[in-house]
Image 1 (cartoon, helix red, strand yellow):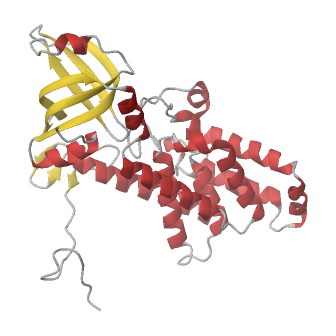
Image 2 (tube, helix red, strand yellow; image 1 turned 120 degrees about the vertical axis):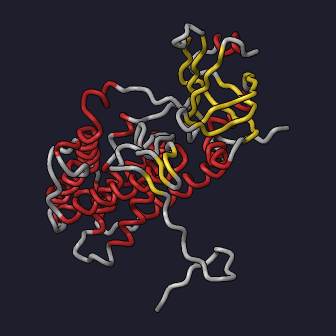
Image 3 (tube, one colour; image 1 turned 90 degrees about the vertical axis):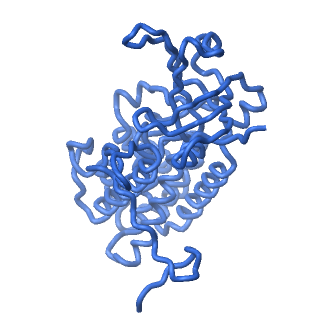
Length: 355
């Protein structure tokens, strides 16, 4: 039987030529179209847990009628040859299609094993990291968020298109940002590490309504709250709501004597959420005005953009040797990075530095 691969795995292998494989995916959109020569065809947008592709089905294909009857939300297997087209991206040739069984649908929705393991590990890391926060108010606030919104958090994407745009992508993004913050904090001891870690957890918390994915599919819908308020405003409201709930608990009475004052602590956390886009033109109502806010802004940008580079090398159109077309919002064409130095005889597994 042909090997079953994810769309991302097929895309990686297709950089070197045709790939013969099967892929399981969900129909995001299916529409009848016409070429300029009035030749009918179907255009089907497919998605799995990590990636997307467009399948164009011409009227002389044996499965043309089957594809024309597909509905949004259907689950299918595509079995055939795949290649990376310079203009149209990943495309299929000499393929056939069938509906997935209930068990295959369950397996597809759970995601590939490697992704599940990585996201589960990232979530554990986030929970363990917030447990180390010394400020009891910030620690309690973070714990309350995970307790109440754990399932939704695990199914939320970090963005719609540009980076970590997959179910659980926000968990990956948050965990990686926390790793960066933990590495930076000893280098810049003036940073309030407790506040920075809490800000990282909450900075995109409003995306639990903007970028939430359902249990039964990979299509990110639209939420009225997300549309009307945006994730920054929702995040501010969420922190204030959780804070008020914590104030009613017995343990919160001990906060009255803590320094800095509790309201200052809450206000600075709100500022990190409000300022994390950096500038008003990018959606933040205020610019970063504290060291923690500035650090959070750059950590967020760093992780997002490095993810865009990684994805861009797989999806961008080659325009010259080692050069790829621009992937927005990155500022220019992509150039393949320099390989790491390997000492002779190391088989590329180690690098050598001059002391």
